[in-house]
Length: 352
Image (tube, rainbow, N blue to C red; front, side, top):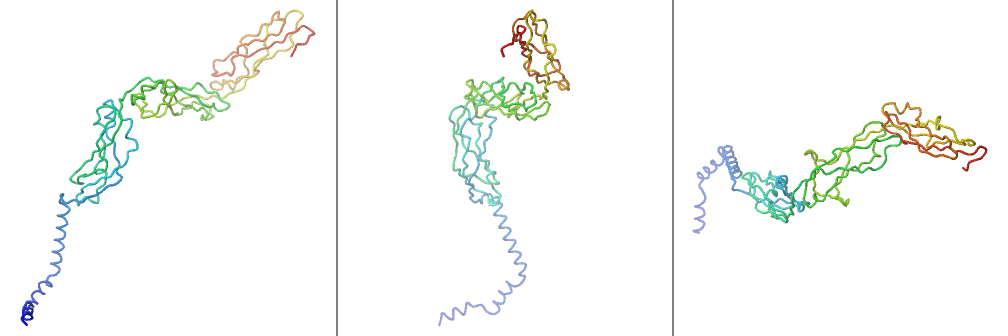
């Protein structure tokens, strides 16, 4: 009985209940606006406080290699340990406001080669950059890498040689190809550079266009030791401080023309009394020439320098006789021909 009386006493009277109801229903839009303002202020407070962070994990982060050139200027170079670097995982405490925008690039995960000061096996720490904007890096799955270091040296005036392959297009003559540059400077690890004695450029003449003109092509090259063993690796090839990955080869093609040898005045003098000339032959009877402008195409025939003297001859004579080469020609397939004069006694036949 006493309990019921106590509970009834807790129930608000009609006037009190109406007052409470009016408090919550009057100016409800103003109260809702105030609530929204409060929530917004709370959000601004959360995002602007750098001490409020969330943990974020990045997987498969690439490591950047910094200051390669600085290391070279210090006379050193890494010869192994940087190839196929494994990606790492990274844990970061990121400020709430930057959580969604943060990426591995914001932390500059790198190794600094300028920290290396000697050759041999070296351990290099993996570095990161932290900031107020993107937070602090707390953990890396790998903290360092191991590399092998050698002295970095340069050697100049290494000769360039052309190794020709194939043939020029049929029906053309090609001048001697020239290479640019003729010497190079090589730089790299001492263990490799000190053994290199030549640079060989590979020139395939079958790639030339069948047109009579000067042609310039870029061709590949390789480096070799004195025993013709190829050297490969991190070696820089330069000319006048310009890095090279190919050389330029220049060659001029000229059309070839067929020209007969003049056989109208091959001999001079007379054979001995009682003998006669049975036959005269020239080998070859036709040669191929190439020249400037129309000099080759307009050439009717080519003459012997001197006729073969057969005065008093009593037997067959075979001689090599030079041909007259006009100055406007750049090529003759033959500079001389063989002249054969078959001689026999009158009335006898020669053995053929």
